[in-house]
Length: 388
Image 1 (cartoon, one colour):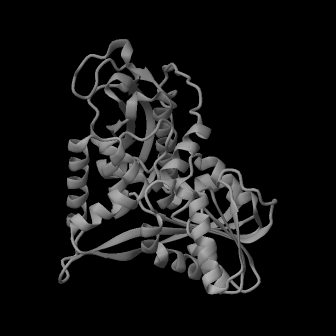
Image 2 (image 1 turned 90 degrees about the vertical axis):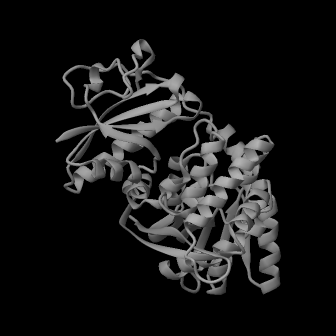
């Protein structure tokens, strides 16, 4: 098999982020190997001053390497055939000597020589969670939330929520899933860490005369007891948690044995994945932030949920969105959607104009070209699992 070198951007040269990239890349390679695919992660090197992490894979084709990186929820900058051994590397793919500035972020499992490991402290996920809470409190998500109603309805239908089942909606936002479950006569509970969104959910429940318990909490610290729900759901919610591993553990913990977990998330390859990549190209994400669209890959979610679940499966679907034109889409998201609103606020006038232009170009590139206005499909994946 040939060796391929993958180049990844690491915001602010953050070693902890590079270590995360390595971990998910290695797991994705292992998953493909178990499936009998000829691809294997070898090792990695980090060049902090260039904000770059290099991953070395052995594979039958570049397509398999690209698939492995995509499964990991990572966005590669470049992939090329490796012409030198990374284990003794002193050169980057462009031939520039790096010397001691290139440091290993992992230990090679395939080379007879041992590569040193640089250890760093775990990023402060509490601080990251606080920052994200402020992001989702900015803008006016209620004006964006309506776009995801069909996703939430599909999730509830797909999982098959029944009357009298006890259902938890994690990161409920303005209450889409919690309300949909209540309409099916389920005992519905929703949690979110943005008080303003919970207040909107309460008003919606009152308007429909639905009984929904709404609790202020974050996905990583659910206040509910172990095994207390028949069904645990999240639609475009838990994917944005600061600590993905902790959030996944909580999902499993509060689900009763034999209960179901259902998660709807935007895919890395889909339109919203493109939005997040576009924003990230203009404004670096906070240190320690993990790509939210990892949750749009079945293998990654299966790994996050771990041995506590069985029968993991998934389906993909799209929700069709319509806007007057690309500019209308960009202005809506720059004004009201927390992540793009917060990112734009960190840019000067020229930077905001450039971000807006890229968002318009993204929307226009996805236009189905049907009649007046802009019509595009946003892909998401529903992953389901059963608690052991």
